[in-house]
Length: 329
Ligand code: G3I
Image 1 (spheres, rainbow, N blue to C red):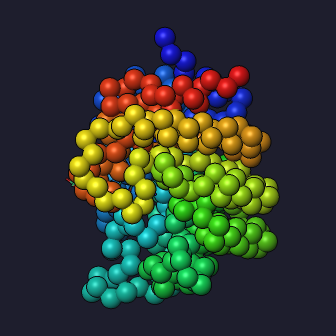
Image 2 (spheres, rainbow, N blue to C red):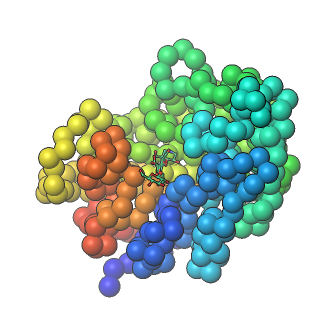
C-alpha cells in the first residue's frame, strides 16, 4: 500500500489537484486518497460561469464543489479576472461598441460579487487576478481589455470588490513564469504596490508550470524568497513538470524514457525539498492535474503530443517522482 501524499505533507501544506468533471470520475481513487484541495481546471472561469450578462451557469461548478465538500476537501477558486477565457460581451455594449471604464468596473464588480457570494463559505481562497503582468519588455502590465478600458487600477478594484463580496476569503494574485528573475521582480513590484496602497491581498500564487530543465532551482528559490519577504501566503497553484524543454517541438516521442523519468524524479525531489524548507510561507501545493493519462500539456504547445508531467503514471501508479517526494523523513 502506498502512502497518501496529503498525509505525508500534513503539517507542511495542503496538497491539491486541478480536476474537471471527467477526471473526477476517471481519477477518483487518486483524488480521494492523495489530495486535500481541489481547483476547477476550467469550470469557474468567466466564460464558463457567466456566458451572458443576465445569465450565470453554476451547475457544473456547483457539482464540483459538492463533490469536494462530500470528500472533506478544500476548494481554491480559479479565477475571477483574466484576459483569457472571458466572454466578449463584458467588454462591449449591445451595438458592439467598447464599453466605458465605469460600465466595465460595474460589470466586473457584479461578476465578482455574484460568484464569490454564491460560493461563500465553500471556497476559501480565490485567484482574484490571473496573469496580469507582461512577460517581457519594460511594461509592468500585459495588454488586455481590462487594462485598456479601465486602466492600471483594474487590479486593485478587483481585490476591493472581492474583499467586499466575501471578507473571509483569502485573495491571491496568480501568475506563470513566476520564477523568472525579471518577471518575479515585476510581480513583486505590483504586489508591493497593492500592499502599500492598503489593497486587501493575502497571497501570491506561483503557477509552477516547469520542465525537466527550466527554471533553475536557484531562480525558484530566489522568487520564493522575494515573494515571502512581502509577508503574504504563497500557494503553488498549477504545478506540472513537462518532459520537454521550451523550444522542443518533437512529436515522435511515444513514451517517457528512463532518462526522462530519472531527471523528473530528481527535479520533483528538489522542488519539494525547497517547498518544505519554506513551509512557513507555503500553505498549499496544487498540481495542474492528477496523473499522466490527462494533462493540458497533451495539447500545448503542440496539439496531440503526449506529455507525462505528474508523479502518477497513466495507469495511476506512483512514479519514481512520487517516491522521491514522499521519502524524506
Ligand atoms: O470546451 C471546448 C470543447 O467544446 C471542444 O470540443 C474542445 C476541442 O478542443 O475544446 C474545449 O475547450 C478547451 C478548454 O480547455 C476546455 O477543455 C480549449 O480548447 C482549451 O484551450 C482549454 O484549455 C485550458 C486552458 O487553460 C485555456 O486557457 C486548459 O484546459 C487549462 O488547463 C488551462 O489552464 C490554465 C490556467 O487556467 C491558468 N494558467 C495556465 C493554465 C494552463 O494553460
